[in-house]
Length: 273
Image (cartoon, rainbow, N blue to C red):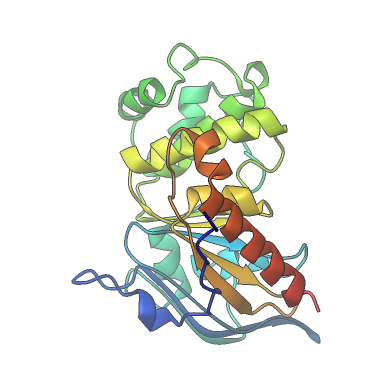
């Protein structure tokens, strides 16, 4: 039988993603950002509904990390509007966002469980109480037995799990993940993608995920925004055919998934012109 056609991706506005009765967790409207004379982001609209996982893909250097930092309130936008959990002010947005940068940034002198519980310690919890809060997640996410291991004793994938648990334990409703598996080999990366899919199902949060891996974005995210070359704008949005499905291998080799991947690649190429 001939393959069913897949609709061409169309850019959507922030208002298109308000969850019924739940509002919009993240809304970016007419965002513009410059560094001096350099225009990095121009007329960018993006939104995420509560517990929606939204992926951001685009050419290297197009402003993906800058976009996450602007959403989190770590930088102040040149123009436009950003709203997170109903809050407009950068400091208030930061209170609702947990940001996981590209590097795991684990403290080498602390055991894994204390690295994971760092946000709890920073909020005044004693070490014993913070460890008790973190311990169930170590078992749930396959790290049982490594609570007292130092980061240098962990594999790359295990370090990323600890970093993600630290992000979860911050207790924020919005997670901003910047290339969380960028430094891993292909096999470990695939394993971590399936692991993260299960983690997000177990601990639902609103997520904005930046990645350069089209397959990763389509597998992990409900919806994927494709950015143009700098200055970045959204040139296309695609919904994932079966986000976070298991087993991963079957999901990413399905005909519909392959068709969406081709659409995303085409949009990336068009956005670079």
